[in-house]
Length: 470
Image (cartoon, rainbow, N blue to C red; front, side):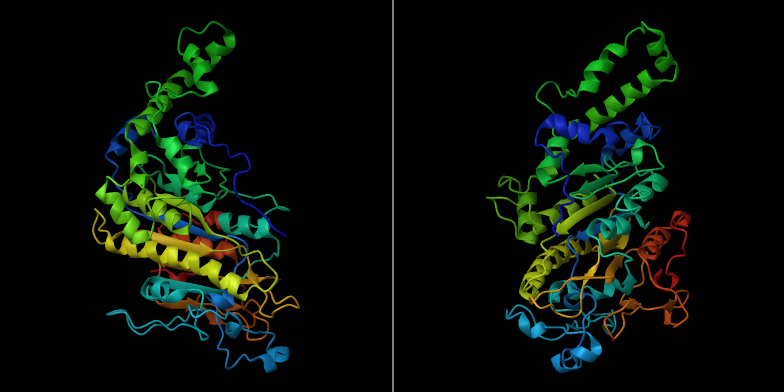
């Protein structure tokens, strides 16, 4: 049941990536930010509010992550009763504890209220003072594509087809940030069903794609797409009724503006900010040290992706980044160590990102984490019982992590059941367990993210989880 959410049309040629960037190029063509406003963004001031959506691909094991259980209570001899088996003793790797992690108290943050599974690691757990963990989320599906698209949009797909816009698109559509590339979608799908092209994400499948999109061409920094060749002629005197009609609508003028806008981006030399293996640049050396990157070989790994996210936000290149941070989780055979190792790589990279954002002053005051909201999710969870093949299968109930700006910290909202980790029911106005209450669904999480920034969340058709709003 493998899947691949990478762009199937990925080709590493410049022409391909200019076409992939058509949503960005077409921002003024489709009624987006005027060129004058964009030109002001040439100073590359970071957005006052940033968002990062982190996807763990394949369906994560929440006993190993955000919804652990005490193995002394949920023992193997009680598994037929509880339908839960943590299996921490089966990991057989000294990097992973056999008990849930309770982080050390952070100075001034108060006693930790969140416990974590062994895969989280001490590094990410130490940032408990920025977190709310939401447990007991009803994913309403056991299908990869459905759960994945559900969490990206906050709307249950029709069949497997996504409905609505991505949350990052909704944010950009409402906020209209003055940054060169408002939204980057890194090896993740993106949708836009209600805004102009200015809200489209720039979709890339790897860091090199982003470099190719931002790098000026050798031929006088001109765009080499087919639409360029066709519309250059159109900028002259119209010679047909059809061309005249387009001219009346202002297509020629808006095309000229968007062409200038793209050239402005290319002239900034923004790709240099992502050349992490440049040994002549002290700034790149600092990035390598922080994220544990090498000067040789591929750096399109979890740590390199996290460094890309931080750079895009800190350099004022993007406001929203949606990223597939790690994968390898769609396994059903002997998966305790596999899942723990694959998740740990993602969580360690996320910890490096948070370390970086906490240590980096924001021009508007405070640090970047004070201005950034992070949501971490997967399409569903794994069964709380281990199957006959020593692995775990697809499970309906999941968890997610919210952290940073606009969210209350050091808090757990919701709970999965102590029998079979079923989705809980709650009074969503207070967070109290209520047998006559409601499930938590992905749309509640998306509404909460939007409300955390004071944005209109009515598109979700639910109220946010108000007890966790700062």
